[in-house]
Image (cartoon, rainbow, N blue to C red; front, side, top):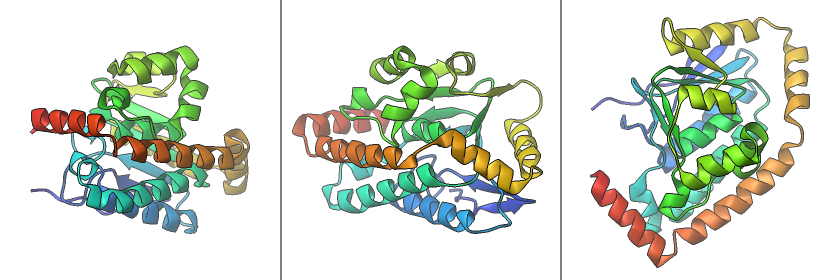
Length: 249
């Protein structure tokens, strides 16, 4: 079994892999906590000017770890780790670029709404099946998705749960660039290098102005996670998740 690559500083770009530490393309409570620590350290490290998120080979992220959804003994630690990571991401002061090469599902997709640029390979896909699972979206995407996709686009994406290819995702505004030649990682690193060369203060101040009030996002993250936690205590939702987990096994 492969293992999670450690964050790697390439010039002034910190390359961070979105996965569990045992090499699965999912986020469990330990992965959330690790991501939060990585972002916290990157925020105060002057050598880091840009963060690039990538997945494992051929897959960006398939979402949260279902086994933790179904284990009530892990809910408290899971909710705390998720909340901490999303709050850190929402308030992170430096540019974040996402390199998507493969599937981005659930939290593997909602995390993209916090990225300043999403660069994807042509064969990548995007899906947020929260409603199908009996859950609500996370990461303040109930605010960010209508802002980025428009209300109608966000409603279709989240409530119908359709899978988007890169062309549709770009047309809606979720993807910024589609890579047709070379690798998505090379293209994303090139953009990160371009940003890292900019005057630091002007870049960070401009980004902060564009982002606006992050307190609103943090409040929505807290509200969403409360609804998410309540859903995990619902018998009907748990039976649905158990059935989905069995089908996926």
